[in-house]
Figure 1 (cartoon, rainbow, N blue to C red):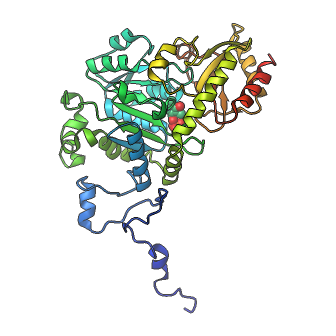
Figure 2: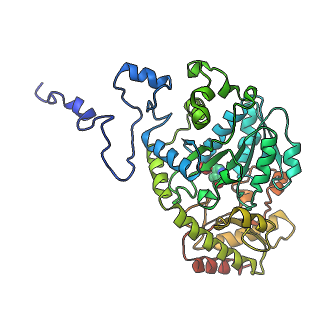
Figure 3: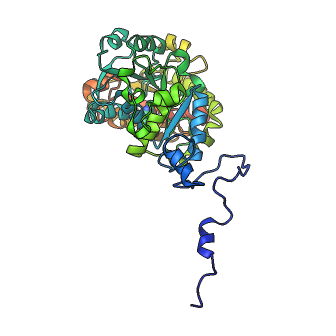
Length: 437
Ligand SMILES: *Cc1c(COP(=O)(O)O)cnc(C)c1O
């Protein structure tokens, strides 16, 4: 055949110029390791990696080098010992709670949660035999009273989405620890740039890195961070997946093999992420890493602009209330002073003057939201752009009337995620929209 390819062409197509596992190329930015799988030097090396006796990459559903950098970076920002990255924040919450509660377990959770988390806890975790009791996060007795022998975790957001209630984290952590269970904190809205949950007794942090960590609204990602504070060995019968020998981990208990530094994230990765498959793509991991490089600068600006917008709204006659804990009028202001001294996140909500009727309140919210020109109608937060949404009919639309009021949401509630634009432009935009009422 005259049109045959030169000898070795296809082999070259698949491998020339690149030596898997060669020394670093000294690229200063983190490379996107867009590879599904990793080549072993020998079968012995493959065997050691599969048995978790040697660190290293196998297959990108479990981990890949770009993800490993992201994990170490977020763990460092949260002062944690290890992290596991996932394809979304939703997956991070799912795998963290599955790994803690197991079948038949129970979780006590705040009622003030992101709507997707409420759906997961209320509906899908029930499919796994996990029961969740929701409590008003400000009612410390309710946390205490909800504990059962099967309780395996407390769960709350450090600053709740959308109404920005600030959790009294140290008090809730104390109740969790007295019950012998870890406190899991969703730190998406605050980010470690404003609040590090470890300082206040949290044990595990989850993030939707999609939001402020990435910061530009381009990529979904999630992270579970083990802060290394919880002693799963203290009551080993409660955490058999960690403390008993397991066939899939070579018959050695993870707690024995990896200890506080790695047992929990190894369980999350090697079992839940590997089996359920919510892997993070290398490209998205890269985007989040790049976003994190400017996290503190962006978050400071978001916080300052958010407060300026909140102050404007609090003086507007069409606005009944502004749920911004940076304002003196907020019931969470004292907690914000304690937990958020660097600034309050720019995700908060305000209430339009209510007509006492859902349809009428909806119509007023619609008139305001549809009149916005700079602030965009988007079901996301933590973007560089300013975003508005109507939680009752968007992010929290699956919630019942009771669940909505427990989360502090009505049809007159509008959520904002204040972005990086000039705050005077945002205030002018809100002014022209509110003046239509
Ligand atoms: C968005 C969000 C999630 C879910 O994260 P995804 O990345 O969208 O899956 C969880 N918690 C909070 C507080 C969020 O805002």
